[in-house]
Length: 132
Figure (cartoon, rainbow, N blue to C red):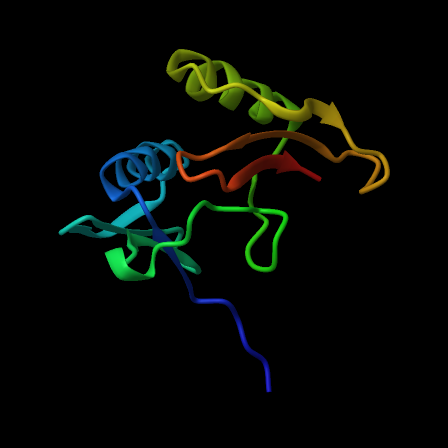
């Protein structure tokens, strides 16, 4: 049986800041908003959607740790190195978002044309924009 990813739910400690961030980020990549309200946003590309919603106060962890068990990062694929660099200059730079993890850079260990920039969202989750 063939299966595909349909949606991912991401519970966040600071929905006011994080939902705004994802509205802008996913909008930049022309993803459609499926729902927004009550500290929640759902947006997708027609195949997979990301849902950002508040964590119940009594279930919030002390702090997000991307190196612990659980989600480490989310990758957004674009067509070319130029698109990666354009994203950095058009989205990251105007918002004061700094590149992390010694990026942008080529990653020949991942493939001949692999190029990435990485940064962290307001919760500390790493986001990778890459071409391959």
